[in-house]
Length: 312
Length: 218
Image (cartoon, rainbow over all chains, first blue to last red):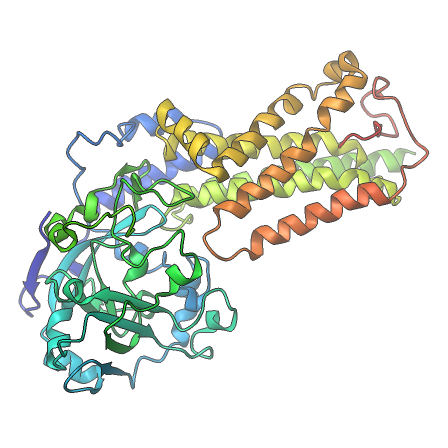
């Protein structure tokens, strides 16, 4: 349940070097089982091998295994590069991540811009293994390299009027060809309440699997808020603004009845069109139960007294 | 005459191959780690899309025949059954992997998720059509066969709605299917029926030169 946190030290084996071999072997089994289904055979065999229904909430949740890096880099929702899951891996090479600056503005005593190189030297990276739960009911386990968002924000000295933090992705249809179509209101925007942003679990990530972030995963700098649905974890950030009012966020503006500002992972509150009670962990065949706050229940106190069905 | 028979036979085989190829492709991809990070979802999407393509191809037979392209006419049933095979695979994946064969979860999915309701309704409508696709059933049911098989229209509409309702944001792909379906349905209304109006009960024997076009049938 608790995140694995450690500093990045050169002598330690990096996560990228630990081959999740068992998972890979098992995965082949899954895939050939699935193929056999289409061929019209071994269907029920494949199911029973998986142990059947994983939805029984009384059982302890199945263990977390690192998602293979290959999957975390070829199955992405990053509409700036296309709406298919495989589009970002194909198109993200168009993004230039150097030079890159992040503007920090609004309710801060020391507004300014910071170059990504300075971010990397100013904030030592830690490795954090987090579950990532997409609002589409799939999930991964990813070893991020990053640093607490709170450390970053404090450097710019938020004022007492800073009640929310608004984030913005790069807007450049030449580098992000998906922005040529008005699928969403570009640029992508996200936001957090200031206490959520200051929570030690919320990080800015610049790497994963022991390496710098691939472009399709949000290089050079992205947000990771593990207790919220994946779309909150905005990628390729160029602007951070501290504000007094709850900021507009892209998905909730696009479909307010389906995506809220809070977007906390919550198995008890369904998406209007699909259930959030279970999820498919990438690499597994059947679904497993979804945990409140994606299992990070230490954040629950942030929402004391709030009706999470209303503030979904 | 002999060459026409050969050509028709070749077309028949081509349809078999075209209909089975997507399944073989998926099986091959599955065996070679080619289905991506979420293979079950990919199989669900691909079987659904192939089923819809074949269903639209089935629905295209009659309008094409009315504009003089009758080559596909003898193979309407084959296209329809191929489509249903993918529907069945699609349905089985959803039952087995999305719901782990749990009846309660399946019922809840159908009752609570409009896109599942639409997809399931389409499936339910297609089952009797597949079951009554034998020559014997056509003969036994007579006119009622024609009436029964009109269910393919609501089934196709529900299938497209199922696709539209499950898409998160980018509606373009399902709208393309909706446009093709609309064209096929409108074509059926505006292009006059040809003079060939064989009664549904007088299906020609296997290998006969012309295929029936029961009035109003799919």
